Image (cartoon, rainbow, N blue to C red; front, side):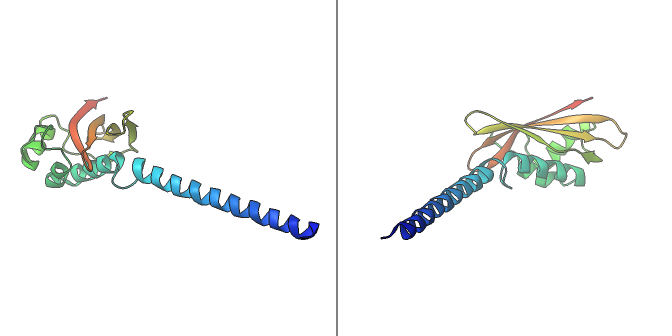
Length: 143
């Protein structure tokens, strides 16, 4: 093999290695995204919960709750709990902030909200991953 051909073989090998690295990085990024940010993640579950509360669909909100730990027996009981504090009506919400535990099996999601009377509050939702994220605790602090 002459020097010119050898040079092209080396360049081709480098390009192939770089392409493989890009593919590996892309696959790794995809899996990281689906683990921490995808539709089934804690942020999406929390956002779905808030959307259900905003629309008054407490059965859907209740379906996102872990029945073993949250202490609500039904969507109606959840509605009554939120209503007792005036938290059952949300006029707007801001982007959620997700804080994952070190083991990535639990998370706290913080969602600022505004109520129809223009009072503001923050929903704190604690979630666990039991073959899918479920809410274990609902707390709201009025600002």
